[in-house]
Image 1 (cartoon, rainbow, N blue to C red):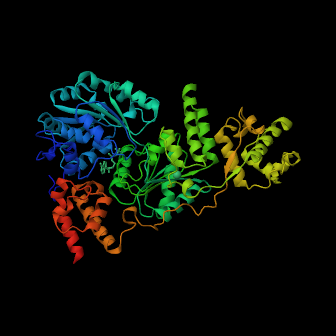
Image 2: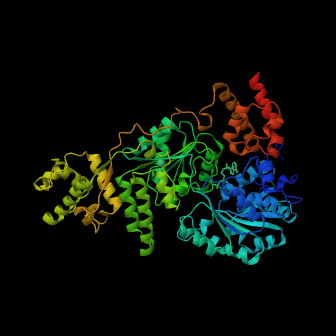
Image 3: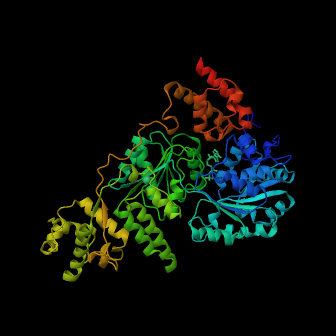
Length: 632
Ligand code: ADP
Ligand code: ZN
């Protein structure tokens, strides 16, 4: 099935690839042996060992691990160790084929059942399952809960149930899937089969919901560190966001894969177009596009090198492309959970990656407005406002971003040395007096003139500008006129933004976005609350020092780099012949190690991370050939 001419049908659900695998049959194997032989990794990471042991032994588990932390192995290896088939419930239909292909490349017998399969393909998968020829079966939740599927599973031998993206059970979350609620049926019908639920959403509320809705009260909970040390967090002040983004990509990620998140569909389209016009290979993705176009763009992103996906948050769940080198936000995410999940899609291969965001006054105003104007219940609005506040706190912080992020997930840590604040500590000044000036201006307008104005006019008054609008309203006669000439427009906007972020100032969206005082304004006016501000960024920006070099090769010497490129070319050809994304053959990190070690014989590849038994057999000789040719 792995023959070089092995063009496989994309419609076979995987099962037609047949057996020939010994990964899942016979006597129970030790998890570590499976990790080494099948996956080619030397050691478990973090909590993986304990989780795999617990589930392999028949225990239920709830696994909380950040994106890229290594959740898949937590159910894949127990499925291979235990008798029978591991059934994986996943909402990600569009990605099942890739997941199955990746496993097939490893010599694991995997298949999927979802609505993309035609009837004969479904039959083949069902027969393979009943014949005990599958190690892993991926099923869409809406399909799993049908009587046909349940009775099929009843006739099969099931090793375990894995419920991936388990936060989809949460009605409060943005990925809610009603079918997930019905998954408690698994426990009722198969009380003796172990279940493992996995998610990268870590807040306490979601966790509690998963436990109760999936009847996992007795499951052992494994909480991993949420730190992703290879991701560098940066939040820059928005000036001309698209231009800033373009510079960021050109200067630091030319030719590399990345994701750019925007709030609206229109902005997604515009941004993709803008990047394209500026020579960046960008594609759009949002829920308003038809399914075929979405699928096409997603597939191109996964298969081709160096594509920038410009997307709404509809894109990304389950994308396991390891070499996404940056995730950029042009709009403020609604919550820290969302931000963390989205940025977590960068650097899954463990190599250096960037999480970059442009943030400004308009973001704060817009997000506050969306909450106020939503039709949701008061309770939901309060929850959303609290989540937004935490996100704003992250943007405005003058402390290490990572400390702040991890703290949100109840994890303590020290300054990280790999975020903008650590690398280039912002100068902080006491803005209390300046804040009082803004608040007094808003107060005087209301008290003396019974007027309310937006941020622009308030700033012009403070700076003492004589614009038409100032003269027209006679605002130059206010006592606060010109009391803030010492700060620039941008500094005042930063001040207003922070005051709104802190809730010390509010925006009335029902009246032309005019500024209003709040309960909290008084504490600042009375000097009871200090306002700490960042000095305007002079930043040459905290850049990567690698001038367009990919993270995998940043410190390779020229001859090794040449070999790395040859290996990449070989990989591209092989991936094409197998109809799979390049990273399914080998990750960049694996090619890098091969380029450094220059194996002269196939067995020397055994200890390279990411080379398992099946890949050694399938590709070992070819790789040694590429290396030998390079030496000539
Ligand atoms: P997620 O938690 O997001 O589902 P994955 O399971 O996709 O993460 O794993 C992320 C990456 O880490 C993958 O490329 C995977 O192959 C790699 N990985 C996972 N566990 C290990 C390990 N023990 N050793 C080396 N690489 C690993
Ligand atoms: Zn830091």
